[in-house]
Amino acid sequence: MAKIPFIYDIRVGWADCDPALIAYTGRLPCFALEAIDAWWEEHIGYDWYRLNIDQNVGTPFVHLDLDFLSPVTPRHVLNCEVRLRKLGEKSVTFQVIGRQNSIDCFSGNFVSVFVVADAFKSRKAPEDIRSIIEPLLIEDEGSSPD
Amino acid sequence: MAKIPFIYDIRVGWADCDPALIAYTGRLPCFALEAIDAWWEEHIGYDWYRLNIDQNVGTPFVHLDLDFLSPVTPRHVLNCEVRLRKLGEKSVTFQVIGRQNSIDCFSGNFVSVFVVADAFKSRKAPEDIRSIIEPLLIEDEGSSPD
Amino acid sequence: MAKIPFIYDIRVGWADCDPALIAYTGRLPCFALEAIDAWWEEHIGYDWYRLNIDQNVGTPFVHLDLDFLSPVTPRHVLNCEVRLRKLGEKSVTFQVIGRQNSIDCFSGNFVSVFVVADAFKSRKAPEDIRSIIEPLLIEDEGSSPD
Amino acid sequence: MAKIPFIYDIRVGWADCDPALIAYTGRLPCFALEAIDAWWEEHIGYDWYRLNIDQNVGTPFVHLDLDFLSPVTPRHVLNCEVRLRKLGEKSVTFQVIGRQNSIDCFSGNFVSVFVVADAFKSRKAPEDIRSIIEPLLIEDEGSSPD
Image 1 (cartoon, rainbow over the protein chains, first blue to last red):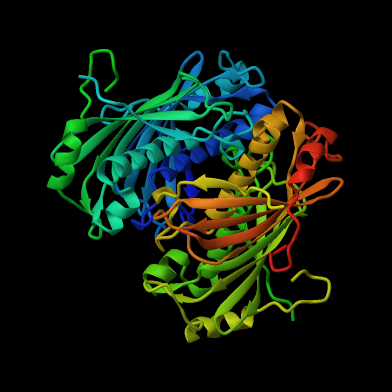
Image 2: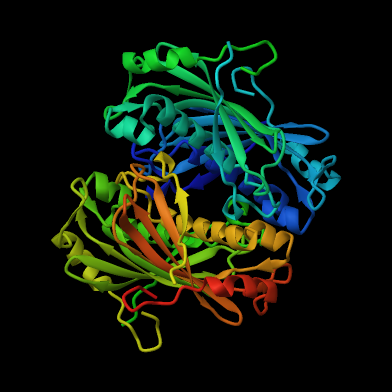
């Protein structure tokens, strides 16, 4: 059964672009991170801000990698698809694919760990969060990156 | 024979930090990129701006990956060591290690390709650049990441 | 006759916030600028990127001022109202009011001049642009800031 | 008697520039703010991060204004002069002048108020801070902006 993809749209603007007339490399991880923040908000009902401050749950990153496939520009909306790829006991892995005008612009992986926010101490994924997001896992299907 | 490491120092400030009281994840690739920009300036005499605009040589990124080892804060200077790791016919790979107070905070790899800047067309590394940077290559020594 | 206000909505996120748990001061001018960029796109059909690159018309800023009235946080969407306040021969003045949950968070003024983009030379407002935006001028009505 | 000017130097890079080949408008307030942050660190011994977190004193901004006089580019270091202009009971006003290659690029004013950081409540300037910074006030001398 196919899951409905989570797509977060970003307006790319002049502010994001460098003298090469494309979005600056350093902006692209930020776009992907913003899409992951929106994924949490959509599925858990808390964005990172509320998750940290209201729920005392943090999800700092321990890894990210990105392949840049095609330049991002303001000429099209940037559609960021976020896929939950792995859910470990204490960590969570997302893949983010950024597309413009149906062309893959970047794809990458982002690994977070769960922490008690105010202590910045590692913890297991909270059970209520696990029960909500576990069904959202998107299995790897051979050719897809992971 | 050991090479003198290239270390680029960054002042981390309030502006870089998020509500978790640490530098925001999205800032860390930007710090590493800025260090690479400074590496070019130091060794070639052109930063990315001058390399693109004055020399018509661009070095867009096709890949980056980062492992986050320890939080970055404004309490110490961020020392970014940039190592030239590979020099292909048309590409160049850097490792960047960010340290604060002698603790490794992040380490990552950044792969650029050479382009004719105004055409955004792939090209070989310019010979004058190759001749300058080839001696700067830092061989992998077993335990180091690459 | 009342004009329909132009409101540009921005998602404020964790990435925008500093350790005081509010959007960083330096992000607020950026939000307002993004709203002005969107105003151009809506009314002229060109955002700054296309205006500069496709039309060779630039609108660099010569002044901005902002009063900060209430903190901006991720708890509400940021509604940025953009008002065209003045249209000089060679310049254009916008007021931007940022609101969250119907509370004014900031209000400011932004003055741009028209330039030939590739020469960065001052020029009069292009006639086609003037004819489109002149009717959008919002007169000052006593109590409103300007 | 002349006071020694406080100058904070910023490396402007590719990352700061937009397709007009100059530092993006939205970066310029950030440069000025960073210089003010460094001013506090130099004179009080605490940057904003330590002032807020270690001393529970915040200085959120209620106003800023900037005039842009000449484009900022990566071709020169950006020298930001910070002048303490006013010290009210509960507020403090800075002027920041950004120069490259001895040319004024921007000049602006920044007004902060003192707050109890963890309560975000207005307060008077702490006496120990007042006693240190009061002698640093730079009187307006006719022609200078304020």
